[in-house]
Image 1 (cartoon, one colour):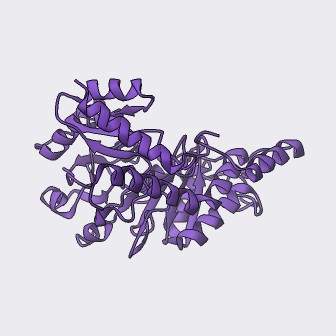
Image 2 (tube, rainbow, N blue to C red):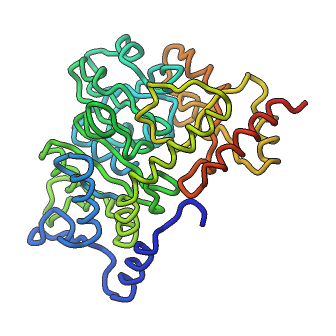
Image 3 (cartoon, one colour):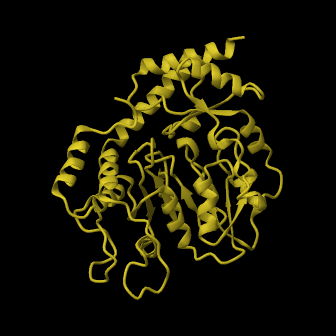
Length: 364
């Protein structure tokens, strides 16, 4: 079996849904129905399980992490010119959600070891126009949300790559005003296309429910969208969530084995990491050759959206401002092990990856 993998229980549940027939939606845009998915549906179960596991008051299931981010940011009611500070070292959805919510992304530099924005990189960018901060818990490692909250601004967490990560303060996504999870593709909870917005604020949750379901009822006061997850993807996400802790532990064990094989010292700051992918750096100018040598050994490695960073995308170039030296440096050197250190693999596979990396680095 290869990643993403789906349990026998999950496959039987999906089969039962299809055999039962009828609508595969848990929603109706009708004021008599209410604002949540139908009680007992898989969308409803997914929300309740997120709330229980991550100890958050409100979970709103949507059809992607991007939708979750948009719903969270929409609660801020951003006006033209309002700014949201975020990272350019991330997937495009982070900045896209800010723009879709009516805001202007302001890009901060990142920490060279965690790859995330920090209070130190954010502080110089705060102005009267700053309405929120959007940290990204990149690759599965948690951003310093509590440090960022010291500025007294709303913090919306992009925890799309860090589902299940936690530190002494709690789970990724649950610290700020709202958080977003992705259950896309090969994420830690893979469901093809799915996402969840979480918050401890009832008003934020209610606004998200209206936005994600066409304004929810007839004669709505605001324009809504269709961000509803269907029951098949919600079912797959729900069952993947039940196995999340075990699968995240496997990811940690694989990374520990990989780093032990290199003789690397344990990094305490990464203890809460859930390793959506494994990032590392190589010397400038050697990445292309290294990727080819790793591919020859059957290990996919890539730079993905790290090259170029967002402030160099045509869609976001107009938001670029001052220099971002760490982002520029990381963009030229960072690579990721993409789809091999996944929960379906034995620990011996991590040693195989480590050997392939050593051999590729040494090959002339």
